[in-house]
Length: 154
Image 1 (cartoon, rainbow, N blue to C red):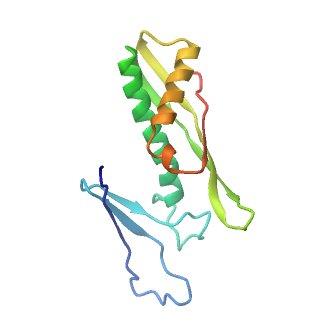
Image 2 (cartoon, rainbow, N blue to C red; image 1 turned 90 degrees about the vertical axis):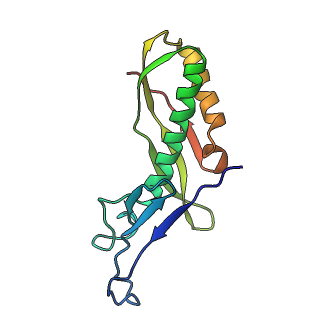
Image 3 (cartoon, rainbow, N blue to C red; image 1 turned 120 degrees about the vertical axis):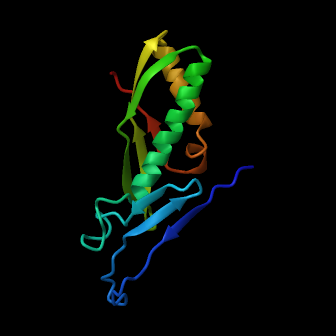
């Protein structure tokens, strides 16, 4: 099986730390060399201790589900002979509290809009492609979050 490696790097940069008034800004480095500026969510830790211009873990979770679904959808569409011109998803994740009071990303809605250059599938075939993509997505298969695929009209 495949192994995926990342590095997460943070430094105190002279902050007191024990007062909890330190920057949560850090960086993610991926095995291929990509570096992503990251931070805690400003919805969880207030600015200036979070940096809203950086990617937070909750956003990364939502985008990983969206990206995985899209990659599977594109492959399945190509296998079925459909030519996809574009694919846009404005996904959203929602936090909730569990019965024990802990917060989690309870729901993720994927809202893909797919434009076809040729041989577009009918509504039933399109729904089936999205269903198969969702069932195949490694990330969706790895989480207990409810992931809904809600295809949008273009």
